[in-house]
Amino acid sequence: MYRVNIDKLVNVDSDKKKDFEHIAEDITGNLNLHKSVAVIGGRVDTFRIAYGIMEKGNKVLFIDGDIKRDVFLGKYKLGKNAKGVIDYLKNPNKNHEIICVTNHKGLDIIFTGINDDEIVTRDEREVFKNLLEKYSNDYDYIVVDTDEDGLLAQYCDKTMIIKDEEAYSVEDMNEEVNRLEADGCSILGVVIRE
Image 1 (cartoon, rainbow, N blue to C red):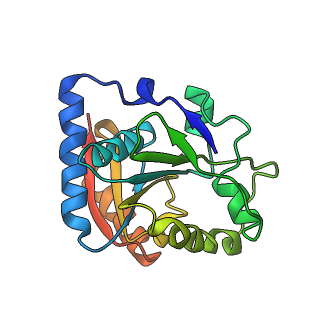
Image 2: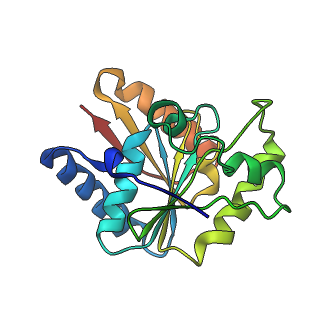
Image 3: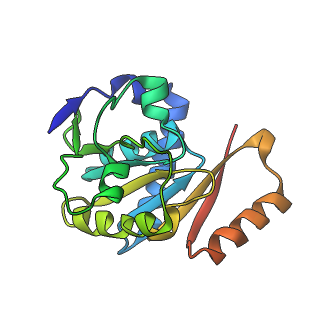
C-alpha cells in the first residue's frame, strides 16, 4: 500500500468548502441504503465531494474512474505509475495493490492506473461491478469520478452530473439524462458549477 498527501486537492475557500459539504450532505441523504455514486463531469470536484462525505465521519473510497483521461496524474502528479482501476479491469484475477491511503484516515483512493493501449472493452467495464462489490464492505461510501460519457456510471447505485454553467442548457441536459438512464444509470441530480 502506498500513501499520498491530498491537502492541495481539498484546499478551497470557505464558500466552496460549504458548497461541497452541502453536496456531500445531499448525496448521503439521498443514497439511503446504497453505497456507490458516480459523478460525471466533476473531475477534481468529485474528489472534494468525497472529502466532504469523509468529513461527516464516513469511511470513503474515491475511485478515479475516468478511463479516458487521468486528471490526477496529469494535473496534480498523483498516482504516477500506480496500479489502479484499469489494471483491475484488464486482469481482475491478479491481486493488484490498488488502494492508496491518504493523509486523511477516512479517505482512500484508487487511481486510474496504466492503460497502455488506451482501450477498455465492454467486457472489461463489466468487471467494474466486481471492483465495487469487492470494496463495498470496507467503506461507507464509494465515490467514482467517471468520464463525460459515464462509461462506468451504470455500475454505480446512483449517478450525479456536474455541468459548467456556460455549457448548461435544459434541452442538452434532458438529452444527456435520458441517454444515461437508457444506459442503466439512476440519476440522483444535476449540479451547475459556476
